[in-house]
Length: 206
Image (cartoon, rainbow, N blue to C red):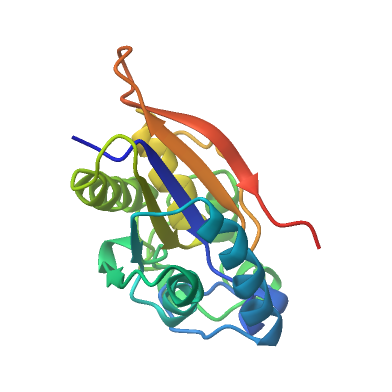
């Protein structure tokens, strides 16, 4: 048994998003714009009638999930597997600072490869933990029910890649998503992979 629809929602805007700083697993809260984004997205998502809500334990994702919970009456389940990718030494820095301090490692990362000596979590590992969380929580729902997963940009892309049967450490075919935008996955019994991407980077018009 599995949820018939999985909706993966990225959190609202934070001050570090505006400053273009890598957040990773730093626990940065929403700013005022992010709170407003979460409230607008919550109205749209609540209309889709999620049967369950699960979120990363980082505050920006948790508060975004709570905006939906306030409209639906559904409790938010926290799962640390939905955390953002850890960026190690680079967390809190912008791209100019990273390139200036670690030019070779930055070039490696820009090519989609894994830089050494940074403490950065491997993208493939992020995809694996994300996919396992989605599958576990979806397993408790029926095929006519929707699971809402509130997470982070890099984690969302890696998770979708894995659920679509790719190695997230090697495959970069999923574009990024905006703050409080979402993607929709549905299971399929038509061979491999077991999930299909039905919508990506969907948001509420402003």
